Image (tube, rainbow, N blue to C red; front, side, top):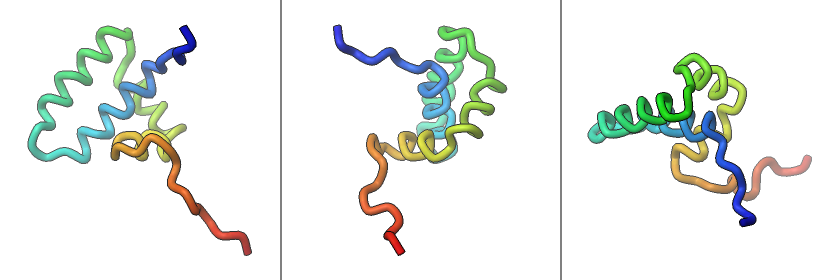
Length: 76
């Protein structure tokens, strides 16, 4: 109870983006990514479209940051 519903597109997008950050071990992520697509009935094109719409969030999560960076832009 009280748990947020997971977003399968976000999950797949983060895994796919993580592939681009990994050298060694990328094959493991690729296998996981393909399984996520299959299990959730998603296409690679759907994931690409999601990444385009939510790039900042996806990249932040793929790099292992769960919250937006503090400080952001300074007020002028």
